[in-house]
Image 1 (cartoon, one colour):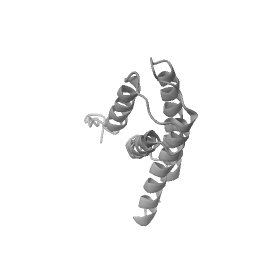
Image 2 (cartoon, rainbow, N blue to C red):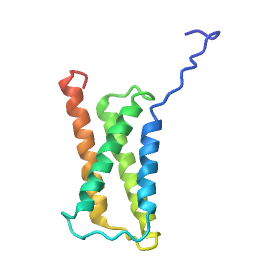
Image 3 (cartoon, helix red, strand yellow):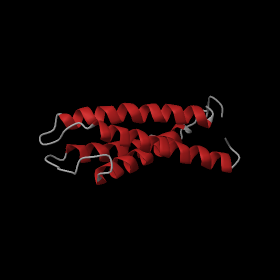
Length: 129
């Protein structure tokens, strides 16, 4: 690539994580959802899955923007998921009929860790860790 022909490729790695965050935000905006409470309530599995997917999307999307080793990207993606999960719980607390639940946040963290683990194990198995 030279100055006369700049790289005009659009980087789309941000699109899927942003869309997924939008879906999580929409789900968090639904008022008056009542779910069973407790560590093994069905909504905890939903939180786990949401954040496992989010973490995988973020770490994969980051590969388009930074050339860091996979472990660093995974750590950054995990941190981003922690921040988004915390903000999501604060937002839910402000919704009518909704409440912030620390067990939901724990499920978010566990899901993000699982998503990162699958990513890292996949990279190791492909010999690209």
